[in-house]
Length: 295
Image 1 (cartoon, rainbow, N blue to C red):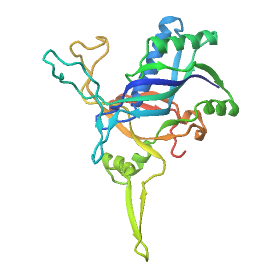
Image 2: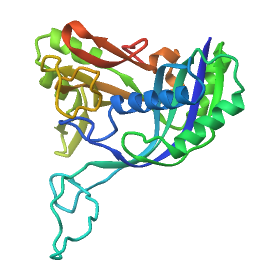
Image 3: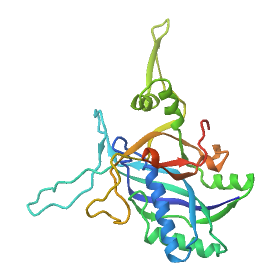
Image 4: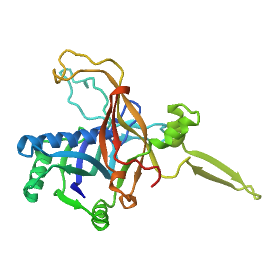
């Protein structure tokens, strides 16, 4: 049996859309797991000191990426914020930040919750969501009331997934890259091979041209950031956030993911993510409880 905390239909303003140094779009999986971890720590500080959020999933109901592409433009441009003018009346220098507004639901697997009043617990979660938490760096405008649900049979699983519709659940598809790399491609070509759109044309006997477009794999395949790899040895840095934790520089890990409709999920572990540290290879990853190769 799984005990699930559902926080549905969260409206988020100005979330960080720069999911890695190479990609822009839906916030990185590290951001969603980080927000879940922050919520767990807030709850532990109040009274739920034994609570543990084992894993989580995110379902996107809508996203508005703040970019603009004018007529005849080849690329999209980031829509920046309107910063106040400086003393001379000129615009101050600023760093462009990719932002998005989105609506999403969080599905969090709870452990060691104990015997607590469900209504009191969910009310505390709702209060923290509105007063303390940010999601992917964005401000939470509103969310529907959270619910604590016990999943112990097929009927309860289907009922949960129906609550997440309409929407798209992000799952891991690093298996696609792994197969391509085993076939001899390097990592970047393996990634781009699944993202590119191939256009082809045919001319019939009447010299009419028919264009078709296709991708290597059917489905909504996207690049996603799922963690970091350490590129320096562990050590200390001046003014680091926590002086008791060793510091190291790291770079983003980017792989493939897929958005699928929740009703296609046959096992909740196919959509739930958790932290995993591979210290031998200096990897700090977000990975799924039970990765799937086909949905």
